[in-house]
Structure formats: C-alpha cells, structure tokens
Image (cartoon, rainbow, N blue to C red; front, top):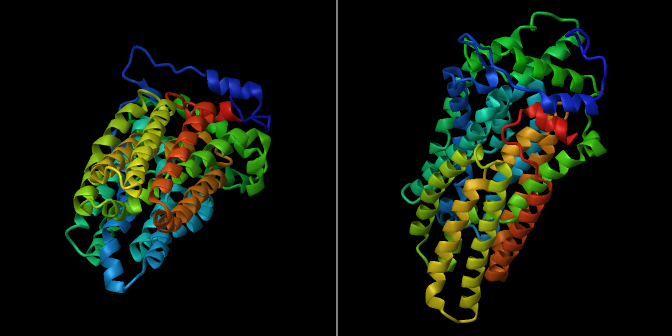
Length: 467
C-alpha cells in the first residue's frame, strides 16, 4: 500500500497474508466509540438476521417434509417405494441445479438479492430454496466475535422449521403441510427490502463501478457497515480490512470455474467439498427423510419416534450455537462426527440382531436410541458448522464459484443417497447403517487433519492463511 492509497501488487503474497493474520484489534480510549470487532449487537443487525432466518425456517420445513408426508402421499397418489424415492430426491435435485448458479447469482445481485429471488421461486414451487445465500450473508454482516453464534443460529431456526413440519405432519394432511411452508417465504420476500446489503459485496460492486467510470457508490460500504455496527462504533479498521483484502482480490484476473483448482486454493477446495460430501455420505438427510420408515421397520411407533427426533434437535442446536464461539468449530465437528458414528453402530447392531433372530425385543428401543442420538449429536455440530466454515474459508474472488461447487457437492450427494436409501435399507438395514458409521469415522479423520479452526478470526485472516 502507498500512503493509504490503492494496492500496487496484484497478488496476495506472503507479506500481505502476514499483515492480515497479524493485524491487531484496538479500541479508541477515552470516549464512547468502540471498535467494530467488539461492537454491541445492534437492532439493525438483529432485524437483518431475523429476516434471513425466514429463509432458514422455510428450508427446515422443506427438509422435514418427506418423512411425515410419506404415507399420505404414497396412499393418495398410489406411489411405490421406488417412486417415492424419486419424489424425496426431487428437492435435493432442485438444490443441486440451483447450487450451480447460486454463487454467481450472489456475486451479481448480492447475497441479499439472491435470497429474495430464491423465496420468489420457493413460494411458487417450493423447490429452489437453496438458491439463497443465508450463511454467506450472515457471516459477512456480523462481527467476528459473534459470527459463529449467529451463523449457527441459522441452523437453530432451520431445526425449528424441521421440528414443526415433523410434528404438524402427524396432525394435518400433506397438502395442508405444504401450504403452511409457504408462509415464511412470503414474510421473507416482504422484509428483504428493509435490510442492508453485505458490506463485503458492496466493496466488490464498488470496484466494478469504478472500472466502468461510474460514481456515487463510494459511501455505500461505510453506510451499510455503520448501520450494522451502530452509530457510536468506529468502523474504520474493519472497513479498511474489507477494502484492502477485496481490492487485492479484485486485481486478480476474473475468476473462472477452473481457477478453483489452482494449488493456492487447494486447501479451501478440499475442505469445503470434503465436508459437504461427508455430511451426506454419513446419512444425515437420508435418515431425516426416511425416519418414519426406519421406525416402522424396527416395529416402533413412527409418530412417537419422529416427534421425539423433532423435539430433541432444538435443544441440541441451542447447545451447538452456544459452543460455536467457545469451544471452536473443529472440536465441535469432531465430537459430532464421533457421536454420529457410534449412533449408526447402535442402529446397525439393532437391525443385525433382528436379522439373526436374537434379542428382537430390544431392537425397537435400540433403534429409537440410535436415531435420536444421531439426530441430537448431528444437530450439535455437523448440521450447521460445515456451512459456517464454507462461508468463512473462501477468498472473496472465488467465493461465488467455490460456494457453488460446495453447494453442488452437498446436494448432488444428498440426491444420490436419498434416492438409494430405500433400496439399501431393503437390501440390508444393518449394512446400511454400518456404512454410514464408516463414513462418519472417515469424517473424524478428515476434520482432525484438514479442517482449520476459524473461531475468533476475521474472514480476511482466515482466507489469507489458507491461500
């Protein structure tokens, strides 16, 4: 940097990375002004997060829909198990397709704009909700000291939508249940006009405008950041960090999809895609979508089982939210994956004993314990933290395409696993859950070796350390 002016080097070299990693936070003494990294939580910030949480709630409703609606849809429409497998995987197939373009859309119309578009599609078709950039938007507007908690709270609201759908599915028809899911979509659409844009996206947009020799947007970053941090908060350092890092990244050539596979982005790419693939290969969405069938296969009440699963997830996510910025992301992920592995082993042993005609009377209770424990420990860590980490590790110049690839990976793998689950469970129930346990164990090793700790670090520090 020269005299506070524009960057004169186009690459994020070791010196620049060290500067971001070592930049110290400071407070303005002797007055009422505080640094934005330690700023109080403002009304504008809370309102903005609450609005985007409408999208989280809707997504929870979508994820929880297949299990309680299964018997009603199959009876009313005369679907076979194979045909219902296609129906269950349609939502994730739509998410897979939208994942390809979600990142680019966020780059062009902003995370806020892409969320608004997603809800328009969702309220019409209740399909393209993952077009939204909820975790990305939250991570970009919140101070680093509360970023993990707010981003994890996204999963808490999602679980509330999931739990509500599971419980209401035992009372109302599948058609009424689908209509209820459109209510938060409409609220989201109406309120999106009243929240600020992401300051980091405004910085990128400002550079595009400068290149086109237009004016009038130079203050947008400061205005948005000041609204989010509060009138009496000094935003100069945070604003400078965002501008400096974005400026350097924007001086790089325009990012193409193949640029993701450069060596300097290898760590971020492997972590992002790996976490998403392992999350689904460990059976997370498949177990949620077919919870009713799993309990019925174990000769246990599906109504009691699914209600218990729904209720246990809410306090579990609360624990995860409270621990996200205390224990750290990586330890919580490791504990969660270990718990998922042990839970799948319990369910696998239960079905194995049933197949061997041994202690069949304890199979239902073992399956209940295993599925409830899996849902709880998954909700504590692995349900939301991979999305938090994804929103933190990609540099701004590849965040769009990197996020799209990670989103495509998670929902493509989810589509495959959800579609195949019915066939796998018919083939060998015990083997299915032992396979999920193997992937959960692989997740523990992957996280311990490759996933960085992001707690208490700015996005710029995290991304500089990984490129």
